Image (tube, rainbow, N blue to C red; front, side, top):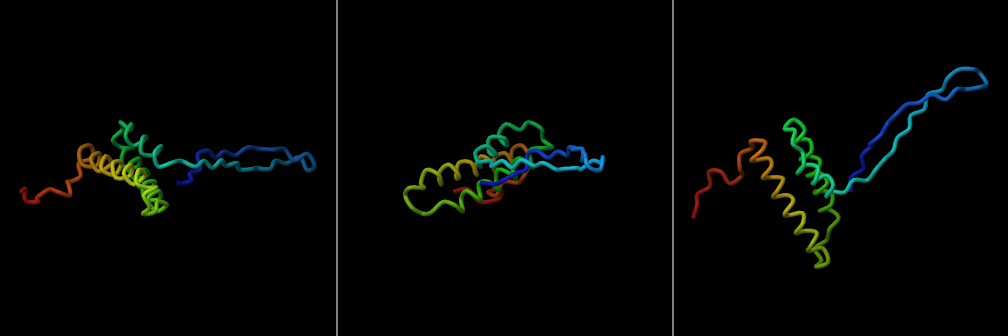
Length: 108
């Protein structure tokens, strides 16, 4: 899982002793699963934002794949990642104009 800072804001708290203000920064960190990032990429309709969404989903997939072992217990997880990678590649080719990695290969 990848962590993102999803909220950052500055607020003032008066310092009553000296009648000045102090600034504090407050951050909230949320853990986002690769599936959430993947679904955001699938739903993104803005072509300007799509590359960033696909990159984030691929980062999440990579991190998750590093967590999985070769045991049979993780077969389903590896299959899900394989399907998601294929879908993200299709987005890159069909929506973002990437050249297919299979382009130019001879057909059988």
